[in-house]
Image (cartoon, rainbow over all chains, first blue to last red; front, side, top):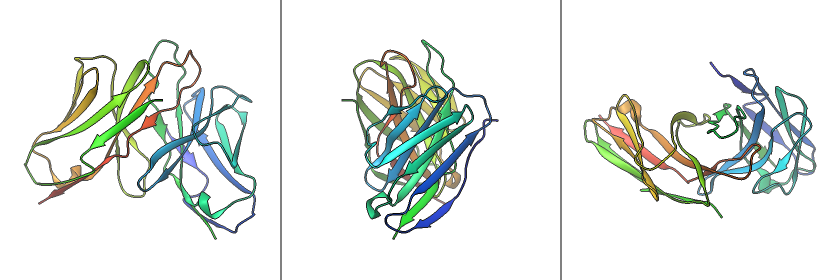
Length: 115
Length: 113
C-alpha cells in the first residue's frame, strides 16, 4: 500500500516563527504536492514538485516555499508564520505517467495553528 | 480557470435511502476526474478516477459516472459507515509535468441508522 506520512499531526507556532512541515512517501512517486484545506474553501494547491530539486507554484504560493532534496521527501516552509496560515496542510504524491491520469495519495494532514 | 462545483453541500439520509451527489466542472482539457472520501481529521482517501464521458466505475455501494459537464456519485442503500465528506477533483492537461488537482468544496454526507 502507498504510504504518505507527515511529520506532525498537530503543530502550534507563534507569529513570525519559521515553520517546517515534512512529508515522506514510500512508493517511489515522482510527483509530490502540498495543499491546504480550510472550511468553506476546500483544498487548494500551494506547491508541487515533479522531480528532485524541481518545484512549481500552485494556486496560492504566497508566504510559502518548498524544498525537495530527495525523491521521497518534500518539505513545506513558512518563512514567517502568520495567523492566516492557520489551516490543515495535506501532502500528496503520485506517479508521473505521461498520457495517463495520476491519482494522488494523501497523507493524514498536519493541523497548524499560528498564534 | 478550472472550476469544480459540488452539490448539495450537505445531505442527510436514512440508512438504506439511495441518493446521488453531483459534481459540475469546467476545465480546458480534462485529463481525469477524481472522487475522494474524507473522514474527519484525516486525509482524503482515493475512490475513483474517470477519464471520459460515458465511463462508469463501481465500488461496493458507490457508483461514479461522468458526462462532458458533470459527474455523479450514486450511493445505493447506504450504511452509517458511508458517512463522510465526498470530494470531487479535476486534473487538466497542462503540457506534462505534475499537475495539481482542482477540488470542489465537498458534500458532507450523513447516514442516520
